[in-house]
Length: 89
Image (cartoon, rainbow, N blue to C red; front, top):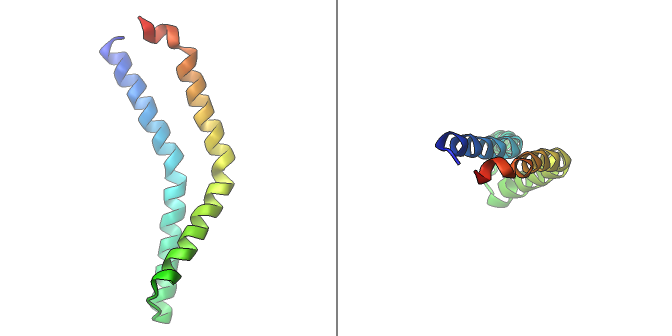
């Protein structure tokens, strides 16, 4: 394996990890922002009120995005394992 090939494989792995995590991070960020705005408007500073809706939004986002995430991960794995001969050199 050449150093360029190692860099390419690591870049693909990191980009795949980024694209798999980015939608859930956006869902968590938006949910946190909305919950914070509601807390500011109602002057309610309870930890359970901020945590439970964020977890519910994260779970809903995970359930909605899971098919896309699985297909993305499977396509990366297929691409990686399909070129095993190239990596063995």
